[in-house]
Image (cartoon, rainbow, N blue to C red; front, side, top):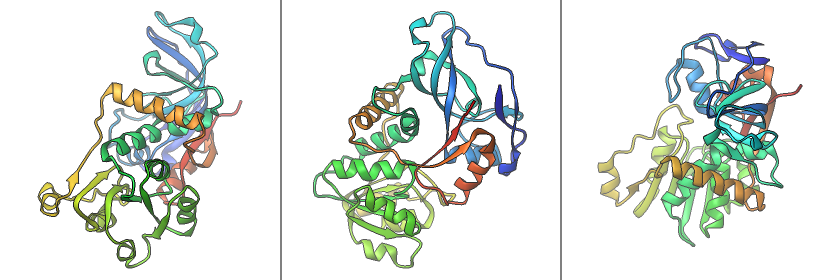
Length: 315
């Protein structure tokens, strides 16, 4: 089969297309005929340094999210899964390929009426956004600041916070991204590449910090008594670094979602159901052929992307 190998840690060019053995479904596993593979910012960081939530030493096939059709099942797995449309995490390796072996217990069937690529776009980002909103508990009438509002998670947070009745202030970098956030329902938008952007926002009740660094710290200063701040990304390359002591002094709670296997499954299924019902729209901003995974990584690193970036596997 065709696949993209991580030959060594380094720049995007270390991702090289080539041949690989076909995976075999072991006990409790299925083989998915991959149609789409997702790419996350975390994968670009791991590719560059080898640091992150994944493990493995090159050469190996990178990729943590796939969407496709079940082609084969291993021992102990229901044969009725063959032919079903599914999405699944791989554990960090094996996703950038025509076929991937994954644990059957981790599969999510794609609801009828929901496109496979949209479903995959929600696999990681959808559950993350759902868990963040649940943890933040935005109330009707509160002002919610969403940073990186045109990204995979941020674009969903804009929609979910608006659905909760909050007044959404979307912060993004550049005209294209700001306008996308407005299209998704943000009542106010601000370009955080512009000096004094935080002054234009004013006081908020909730901050979803997807950037970190100076932008995240500036957003923290907009919170007052009873405010909540939740960090979900570090597009700047560093976390905001707000201490518990600093938060307590302002009467601000630094919250994180409850992350358990059951919570992950529940929130993923909720995101898929909301999308199937037409109440949540994943943004797929870029698509690259499988062989151009290096270009996809370069685009994400350049901060030029919006929404989700997918690899398309054509045969």
